[in-house]
Image (tube, rainbow, N blue to C red; front, side, top):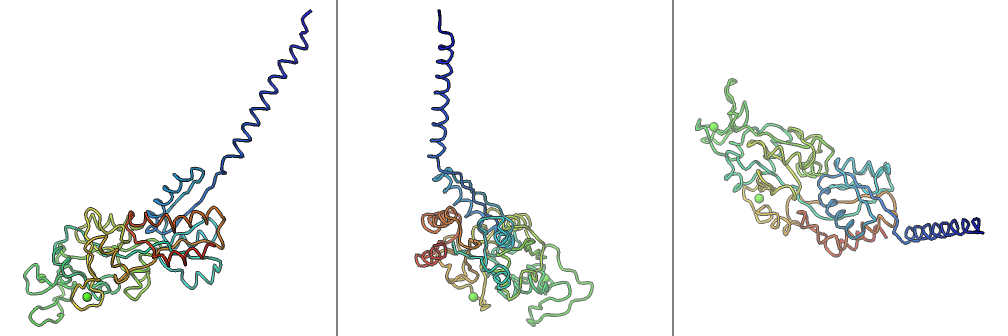
Length: 343
Ligand SMILES: [Ca+2]
Ligand SMILES: [Ca+2]
């Protein structure tokens, strides 16, 4: 007689053994596999392209990391990290004293250098003169803060319409013969073809704060048409021949726009440190360039080991990618100082 029962037991025994082996294999694979790590960043649109590049490179090295980078401006990055909504806030400006007071556990870690650049449309009616003469800090104050200087004709000091006056705004013009600003007739109309269209940032922006500080004011004092993020300003300037805007170095040498030198000391001459020949030129003169700044990662207290490892990599191996994205890497001693903040 066939031992049916025994054979049946034998079969289930084999199945059980196979199951045990499968479960063991799965557990071993699971234990050996590095655990999945998620890191979230948000904030400065200036830092965004650099952080995105770092995230891509790091995730290639460590496939168990998922690093997610979003924009929103420096203000958002700082408040996000302060509320633990993200692991790292990105900022293109120093923390304000009121932010330190409100969130004393925030630690800003320098990650790279950047410059704030003035850009104009490459079809500006007086492009060549502007690129040669640059724009003075005083003129930028009149355009962005006082709102009194409204004509490209005046910035270039060229009487484009040959009416004997260099247009300044609707009621004033510079008489080239007397060199004085004169009241114009009330019906005097500024030529629409020379009217300056200043573009400013509509989001809480480190770029805007840095630019405003250079002009001696705060971001909210800047006049102009609002655009969101560096990409928004770039797009607005590239699509309007009469526009002027300010962006981070990585956004200044793009299709449709030209970087304009700033006569920061108002002496009528564009000196070596004020020139903006190319991205590489500005990068190599960053210490003397009139509007340069440091970019930051901001953490809330000592970061976790995984977040600290990522930041450590950004500050060491990652520095080689900084110039790829258009910024300037830290000096070795700056790297040392930054590393000490996460140890
Ligand atoms: Ca004129
Ligand atoms: Ca100068």
